[in-house]
Amino acid sequence: MSGYRASFEPAHKGTLVTISSANHRSSFLALDLSGTGAPRSWAGSGDSESEAFIMGRLAGLASLADKGGVDLITLGSTFRLGSGRRRDDWLDGALAASRLGRHTSNLTVAASVPLGVTDVAHVASAVASVHKATAGRAAWQVEGGSRPLSARAVEGVIGALAAPRVSRRTGRDVSTRAAQVVVTVREPLDLELAAARADVARIRVATLDEAVAARAAIRQAAADWGRDADEIRVLVDVRTVLGADDEGARARADLLAILDDESESGTDTSLLAFVGTSAGLAELWQEWVAAGAADGFTVIPASVPTDVLAVVTELVGELTARGLRGAVERQAPVAPRKRVAAAHGARRRVAVGV
Image (cartoon, rainbow, N blue to C red; front, side, top):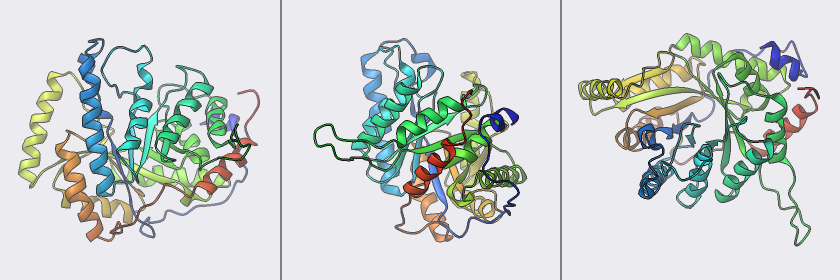
């Protein structure tokens, strides 16, 4: 954590943030659709129909999620369209997210555009393109973990996204609300970044106690930065296998485990996994929110479209019945002006030599 502290110096210290339940506001529902991309076996196939198939499936799922009340969908750095025609396939998430603007009208679309592959200007340009295509509903998902993040590079992208835009034709300010920032928290450095910059922080934990500790740490660090801790939505990643009953869900989970073994994709023991009914997941959701462990969850469907359909048609209703979500309420991760102000304030604390 010291590396990021050396790069970003918090404005305030000593303010203690208590662990609080998130029941005072609607619980946040995100859906990670990275798994809808092309499998690795398609890489380099050059099949011209692959991209159309992947994009068509993704568009249908995104439209379903949008109409069903999902707040955020994410496309991670592993998402690929599968055509194999472009060398810059790391832009596939942003390209797909831009196209989803035609198929959604409410939810926020987050795409990972990785730093380190290209320069800051290209990353900011890609995110800005998604923001324009979605009519101001884009988010940049920042993925750190094993890849070191440059404080200056992250700040450069966020600064470019928040900068005023003036029409060349009229000279008028045509700025819209800045794109949101989603940070996946895997390492201590990611936690500091989330506290300083994020609208949404995604945490990967396996137990309730781990989640309580992680959310408390993020909120405390945000307060150290002079931010209102409630500006950040802390979401727990959960891989789900949903069924009509527990027995059916377990049987499907066993089948998926066999398929995972055949594809040599290992099980991530650090990731919360749930196998059961939508009602059972809603009960777990309510327990974790009440305990101050999360402001919501990012559902990672074990299979599509089965689990996505269950989220929209069953889980949303179960959450609403428990008072965790409003029947028609829609919300952005945080009020745009607050996030822009926080980013401007934090920019003044960036060390020049990072």
